[in-house]
Length: 171
Image (cartoon, rainbow, N blue to C red; front, side, top):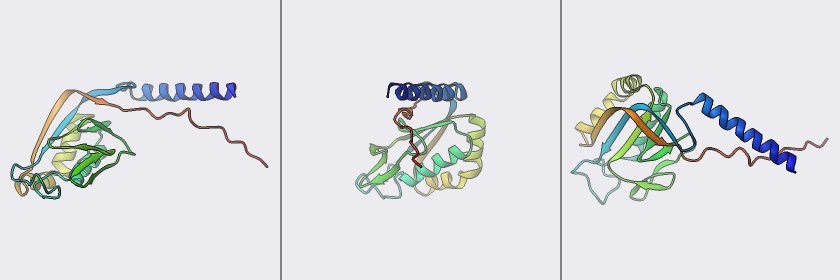
């Protein structure tokens, strides 16, 4: 049993080292780098009661922007302080938008680390230009896009690779 535990610990250390070597801007607690910050603010005319009022930012708006950011080269993304990864649940329930079951509210701040020129040009100049324009002109949602040289994203908890157990094949 002790030998198996040592093997698990060695695998975890090697995988953590591999992550840090491939993503030098990443440590266990946060990811830092340059990129863009998108702030979405509900329209002043939007209902404070009706979550599905079109003049309020919807979960689908955030999902579309986040997916486009990934597609266009973002290395790390957060929404209102919560790191986003492939298993993050970004949805609405009742009157709230949730990130992994945690409610968030306007203004919604989306941070994306990566080449700010490439991300901004491809995401907002090509993919989403009409979408963002409609959010602003039709629904009155305020969309602000800024470049930043120093973005910090809490990386959350790295996966624990030590919980697996060896499989014994019986023939």
